[in-house]
Length: 197
Length: 268
Image (cartoon, rainbow over all chains, first blue to last red; front, side, top):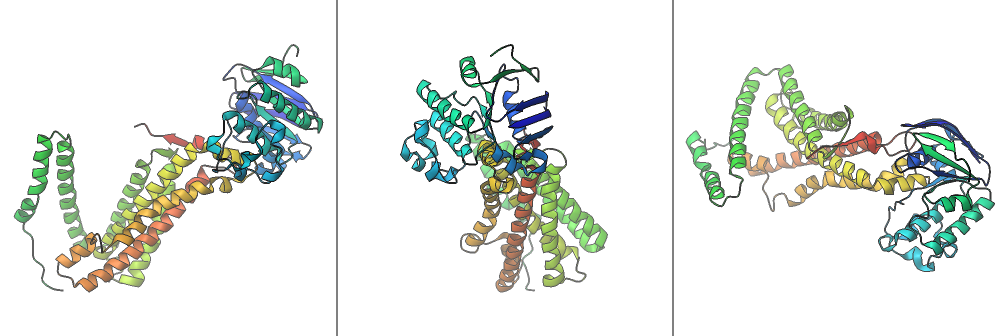
């Protein structure tokens, strides 16, 4: 679960939002409305104000790295700091590549030869290594084709079933309807519950 | 000290003949550098003549306060130069202060030790020894720091996504920035290391050449040069490390965030 109280960042907020264990909230909104800014603020990646907590504790009471392991943010474009894929994992042998349709040899590949879809799925897998309480997903399936989107959503459903709360930014109303329990719209810096869906 | 052959101003004018020939050739070949060349030449002549006059006066007056004032002027000019040579600078007073403090602290300590323990002029702050020594050490530290900070700021900006990817996986800020800090320190120290490696074989350093030309025994000149090279390389290394760590600290915060928003790109 996660509780967000009076979160503000730049023009956004105050945002109040609570997600129960295994609950999924979809956030939509026009481009530039600050959906990514909101997710970055929740992950404490930019200066922001607000009281946040998960079942692991309050954000103010833990060092930022510990918070980010529990509140795992997957940006729309992933970052890579080493040459080989496996260097980005703590336990590369345990990553469940097959569940996302990735070749079992991918761990030995150079990052430079990955497609954008492969990058996205591998970045998702490396986030799961820390057993997060919450997933913040920013357009996670944008670079994926239909088949891989289905695999990704199936893998995500496993996390949800295990109690992980998910905040999903998406442009795809069908995806929001498929996965989300509630649906919010971010506009003019304010988060409001959508009429239905 | 042996006799040295004095130069007349006519000799100096004659020495500039080849440079003037360069200017004429570049006009003829339309290289477009004649104006720069002329400006640089006039500026050099003006600056050096002025420095000669000032140094002569300073040596006559022998005032510790005046010597300190000149040293501070040199330091502030160098600090400004470090700031000006970065394509992306820290916003606000930090931009000048970090490079300036790193340079001032390391050059100050090294130069003081050289004067008080090694060269031991009388008095220890004698401008004839203090100012040239300070100038040589400071000039190299200045180049090192500006290279290091320019490298660091460019790398942190370019690799923002990779650094934040590590932060998002629970890495601390120092761990995430480490490769770029290392890269910046290497860039800052490389000129002094290369300088030490090539010295004497490829190039005879200017100071040593100057001493030999003015009649100093080559062995003595070599000893001086060695001392100066050690001081330069030592001070530059310290200055580069201090400035790089200081700047990396300023570009992150206590919640382990990368604060690229504190950089400002300078328009070209």
